[in-house]
Length: 402
Image (cartoon, rainbow, N blue to C red; front, side, top):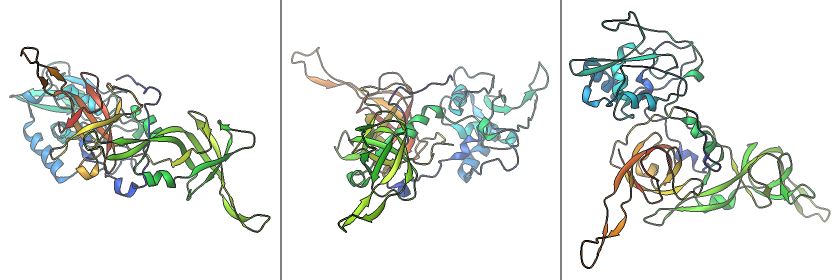
């Protein structure tokens, strides 16, 4: 897969005062077990858990392999992992459903040294026998007949390991997108109250004076004009998505002093503008820079039935396509979690039946048109990356478990 970047405004990290409630454990990280082979440098391997259910699934599949009917129609006999690959891409090569990674992991269970890493240069072989398929990892010993494999020990940096999905498409989103869950958070956010002398608008390198609770944080982002995100059905406000302005760094904390008249006098905190998307001004609000939370996300389907609708398209577009980001009207309270794969449905149009004299209205059936990958989850809403789509995605289109 060639590297792509999102268009202007199609990027981000989300902020919430309810981070304690929203911290969801990395879901089913053990499914990264797909193909990885080789011991990694001592002390460099992540401690990613394997649940008993995942291990049982893998062991069961490893005993017999996968039915040929579950393979992708054009599954290759072998594939050499290359830079730019993702585990989603590789799973799609071999299986009909790319989130069915436990089966791939089980197919390679006997050769796994580190069940969470796969690196460029590793070779995957599909061994088909007696109506079943087994995936093996290694290098061929001989050019003809049965393929014999010898394990390869891979040593290198963790940064060489390929990602589960194209994470570079989410980098700028996690850096810029700002979500505030309720109006009280908007009112209590620190704010720019003055600029350096002679400046109406602020550019990179200039000084901003800020009032509000900044705690012990030094790095912040600026935002303005938050818009409400409403559930298409209930009209409930699920959160507020704010317009990203730029970033700034604390230089000197504010204080409380006394004026010449003896009355209390507030001294605001001093910040320097670091980066700017648009000129900053008095009244802009501050949001903390959140920690990275999207590494090691693993696609998997919801365990229970789940359905909802698309609330908005990030970046104010009227329609979205592959690798664009959408907001969903379901969150942790509905059982949604990071890494969930969802089926995307196009809402059927209301048209007239021209075959009848009175030409009554009728609604065409909803049509399944793609897949969503959930990467950021809040209490009442979530954000998802469009992994596949056959048509333009619009607000109101719905999703279900795949």
